[in-house]
Image (tube, rainbow, N blue to C red; front, side, top):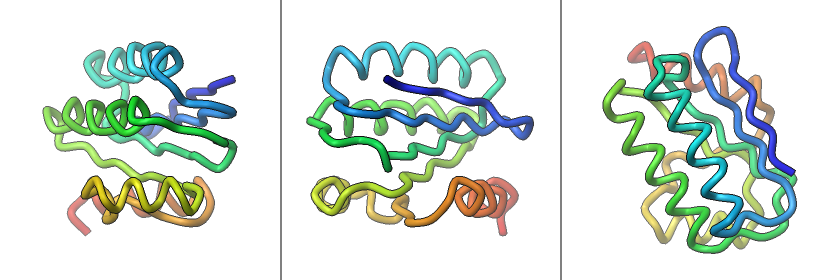
Amino acid sequence: MNHIKLTPGGIAIVRPAGELDHHTADSIKREVSRLIFGGKANAVIWDLGSLQFMDSAGIGLILGRMRDLGAVEGGTVILNPSSTMKKMFELSGLGSHLMEGTEEDAIKRLGGILHGK
């Protein structure tokens, strides 16, 4: 099951659970892109703490939404990936977006990113 929450500050918090494969990635892609292009989201936190499996579709999902966010100069945080996922993200050049902690910590980090701090 996947949950997507939008904060009052325009940050979409995506909490995929279980497995993130091609089928799951497509539904998340549609919803997150709708929020970004609809002017409702200017940043995304990917909270991966409940994710047991992710294939290349998951990396493609995150990279694609980062591209979407480029239009609004938005930010991305990849929160609490497993050690295997962390290695995949680092090899994909996304290491600077990785973070361990709470969603509140990630929101604070994005506040600085979004406001040039």
